Structures are given as structure tokens and as C-alpha cells.
Picture 1: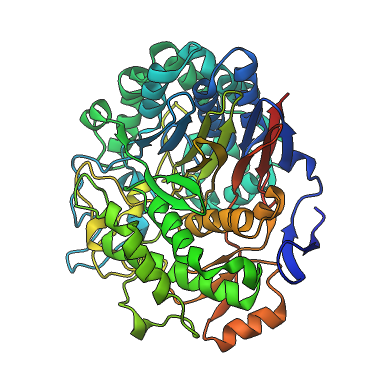
Picture 2 (picture 1 turned 45 degrees about the horizontal axis):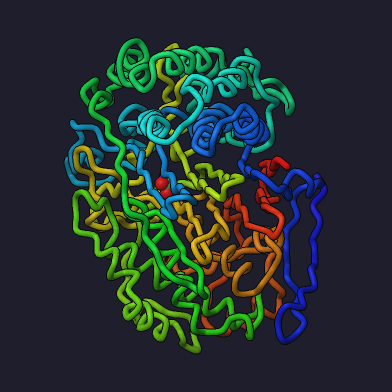
Length: 569
Ligand code: GLY
């Protein structure tokens, strides 16, 4: 793969600025598309094609959403799947309304606060990351079924067909899946079905381009196509899930599966530069913090300072730090704790925060109360769709870590999530990744773990303007915010807004992460002089964004990944 450093000279501000952009793919064609009617950007070619096929067969945007959800469950088995959960933001143009649906996994009924602690109260991070005890009650199928029943046009079975085909006939092994197979090899080889599906007979990893066929998953999808959500939460498939979990000493029960409920929530909103931002409310932290970051930066006229200058990045990092401090203090499942959502995005509060980030030096431990954050994995997936009527869909879905818990429900091809790891094992304890959990995110039966997933929809004068989202744990928040800043504040074209080098700060650990190919060395030096500890690190985001154009839509699938943007004229 050709790795070139693109230097884009951007003249949209008062002085000429060099924007550093990593370009990780040879072909821009797959990653950028313009079309007059519909637009789909996802992290998989087969998934984008599944959504487009659904439109061509007369389906509406919700049918395309269901088709893409099932297809990506097959095509990115390391990131998401029917053994996981997610969120959907849906803008219905004719109602001028944004719906938010929460089909995130919930803790099993038998879960208890200290289930991962030793008798001495020490944490055991591996228990919430690998094996049956890490599995939370999956919500994806229930969510898709209920949403489709309410808004879909095609038959339920028709929307699942492309995914069944993808599972049965296979897709060529791609680099990111190969990397995940290597990373989780020790765990997956313990499971005979995982071994048979994803590895060669001797346990080695197939070469790039080899067909990945998931016949058991195809059969499970056929049952779900025939029986609806009951095909997953009851009957043969449910029995296989519970039998496997019980054998491996997990907690999930038939009662859990039968009683799972999707929740419709009210999106969190904010006005930024004349645009209305809608994003995911708690149990995601994402929406609140995307809005906080944008609104803290709003009054500072970043455009004048220029993109990727030390001054802009310093303010962006300070805003990110300040938002993440609130995350640790206030966020969790709103069905279990009073989360002050409206206060956190209140104009007066954000105006105070905006003033507090305008410091000559980086914010430090002494200047704000320090609370560390719960760990979240780097994986997950996101897709974005727009249609001819001006409706929008932004959905982020996950099984959490690569291949979730590593447990496959016997004979079903369903890889079960490890979403229990998004909870805090105990307050104040460091987990595997050096982060410390907050009180509102402790484990309770049927509670949803805190998320960072930030599906976001932006409207202008009640019409679609942009929709986007990304995978990658806590980085989702800052990647989504930066894409919006690049486009709205700095006026960059959508492709450059997505492709430009990103930074990330999450308060704790106190480091400013800069992804390759890094910023201008002069800028980095100035940031260091202001007290930022810079480290160079991959951020893992893969932003999938679409924007309204004069003639229809522009779609961009992050050039860092192996996604596919395509529309219909
Ligand atoms: N499991 C990743 C997230 O929910 O943010």
C-alpha cells in the first residue's frame, strides 16, 4: 500500500497554512463519492453494496439501515455483530425530527457490582475482557427488529438477504481483519468454531484475499429472517447462546434474552455556528462531549488562528480535556443515575467552560480536579446513509473489543460481545489500560455500560447538512468533533475534513496524542513549550461522513480504513 504524505495547501483562512494529511490508500475513488439521490458510507464494501441494493429494491432508509447493520455484522466480525449492540440516530425529513434509539447491551440480571473483584477487592481486568463472564445481554437484533417494524417498508426477511449471502458466499480477507485475527489468535484458537471459521487447519491465518465464509452465521441469519427477533432471543439460537455461556460459567440467562428492551431516547442537541447538532445522549457520553467541545471552541475564532496551528491545537486540546473531566464526573446510564445532560450542554455553563480553556499553558492536574476514565476498546464500527427525501441515518455498533469476548455460541456463528468491560470494575481502581472508573458507571443488573459512541446528525434550517460517526472508543468523540471543526470552522472540503491528521486528549492520561504523519515540527515544539506532553500514536478512528451538496450528497469513508463510499444517481 502506498503511504504518501499529502501536503495540502489550504487558503481558506487569513494566512497560508500547511495541513498535514495521512493518505493510507491508493485509491481515493473508494473513499469519496458524489451522487444526486442516495449516499452510503460504511467500513465494508459488501455492507455499502447491501444498503444500495436495498434502495434499488424499493427499500427506504430504514430498510437500508437494517440491511447495512446485518451486513457489517458479517463483514467486520471483529468489530460488531448480532452478539453486540449499538445506537441509531435517524433524521426524518418530513417530520423534521431526529430519533435516537439505544439498543446497547445491558448487564445480566445476575451481575453484581464486585463480580470481577478478588476477595481482597483487587480488580481482574481479563475477566471483563475475555470469556463468558465478559458477555452483556446483546441488543442489536431487538433494536433492528423494533425499528424496522416501526419505520421499514420492505419485508424484514428481504433486508437480511444481502447479509445471508455475504456470510454464505464469503468476502475476501482484508488487512484490518487479518490484523485482528493475529491479535486475538490465542483466544480464538481455544474455540473450535472460531478456529474452523477464521483460521487454516494448522491454526495459521489465511492470506489476504482468501474467502471468509461463515456458514453457521448464515443459518442463524436465516432463522432470524424467518422468525424475527424471537429467532434470536428465543428458541434454538437462544438455547445455543445460553448453553455455551453456562458451560463457560457466564451469567447470561434465558430470562435476560427474553426481557431485553430497546430504549428510545431524546437526542442531545446544541446550536453551533447556526447549525443544529443532534447526537447520542447517555448512556453514551459521546453526544454531550462533541457538543461541549464545539461550543467551548466556538467563541475562540479558530478560523483566524488557522487549522493545525499551535494556537488552535492548544485550545482544542484544552477543550477536549475539560469535556473528558465532565465525563468522569457525571456520566453513566440515565436509567440508574440522574445524569445532568441539559446542564452539561447549557449555554451559560458552556460559556464558563469556554473561558476556562483560554489559558496560555496546557491545563494541568492542579488547575482542575483529576478523575481518570473508564477504559474503552479501540474497535466498533460506524455507517452513515442519506436518501433522496433528505432523511439521514447515523449508526454506531459494536461487540466492544476485537472479536468481543472471544466466545462463539456453539453452532450459531454468533460472536458474543465483551461490553461488560465498558463498566468500571470499582471506583478508583486502575484497569489494564491505566484508567480509573467513576461511580455512575459501576456494574448493576440490567444497567448499560458507559459508551463513547457518537452518531451525529447536523441540520441547517431544518434541512440535512451533515451526518457522521466513527469507531475507536474515547477517540470517537474527538475525531467526530475535529471533522466538524475542519468542515464548519475551517471550511475544508469534506474529504480533507475527514483525512486531516487528528489529535486526541482525554484529560487522563495527561498526554496530547498526535497521529502519524504528525504535525509540523515547529507546531509540536510550540505545543510542548505550552506544557503539552506529545506522544505519537495511531488513534484508530474511521470517520464515515456524508454532507449535503447543491446537487445531492458527498460521502467520505475515512481513507485510513478499508471502507467504501458510494451513492446512487
Ligand atoms: N464499546 C465502545 C463504546 O461503547 O464506546
